[in-house]
Length: 193
Image (cartoon, rainbow, N blue to C red; front, top):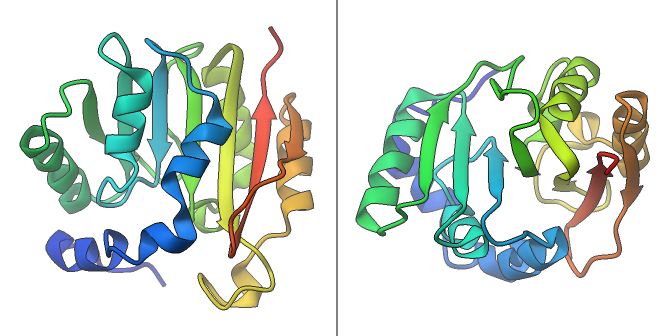
């Protein structure tokens, strides 16, 4: 059953709650991504834009941030947020559940936080992401561990090894990263140079 995202303000109270920083550790996630200045960073399943300011600072003035989501209300909310917060290099766009809508060779970094388990056809989606990466580009999947009580029920959680397998099958070099997150794992999938 899909959530009703029509009330973006309500979702913002949940997604942007101050206590999220304690377990999400956004600065740590951004550090793991090693984002080059002037690059293009994509946030898939961006919700209310929690990571937009962090990505915006990381790519810098010459870079670009695309925050993508399937709910128009959330996309509108994120575009308003970018304007209010002066994130001139950030833009939100509406996408379909089965396609990130990215041009081939257009992304340096792709971030997918708490969303990979929602994507229905992950193998096909991973192939589309692999095509979207520039040489040396990387995808980062941050999702809930099997052990945590956060996130979906255990039936809908995905083992990190399965995430790695999916991206390897899509032609990327994938691995589980060492991280310092209490409730999540991070998988990095990298395109060849």
